[in-house]
Image (cartoon, one colour):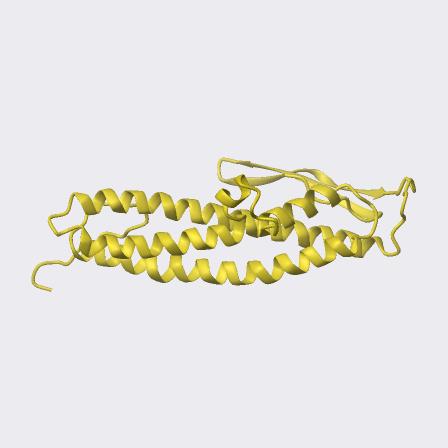
Length: 205
């Protein structure tokens, strides 16, 4: 909704309207100059590097939030899959093993992303989670004009390293495990579940 403060310089803004399938430009582009108020407590040596750091932090925050939403969506789909399995004529145990395996993987990824909620409640999880780290960076540094502290830089490095593994693991679950389960359920004649493409074979083909 709101990006980082930009570096001083010339910028151009334009306005268009989308109506009836047509994008129409309203007026002409207007250029303006952004000036610094020079009210820095700790003036940065390179304002451009400050802005780049903030943009990188906000992008990592976007990835963290997207991963969390993808996990929530997969968990919701597993709920529909459980209900579909319960209405099938085949024994549920044949399918619930795969569901439990996927659920365990998603729970593990969620803990890597957001920490263990039980340990947090019991004050047993002193190590910040990925979401804790990136949330703190964005919250503390968004409106700061100073250069990032060593702590912020180290935290951002840790977030990048951990997110890389988390996104890779999540991709494997969503694009392999969950996808394969959808196909097997459709082949077995399961009722509709979200994201499943119905299998239909024309008789005689």
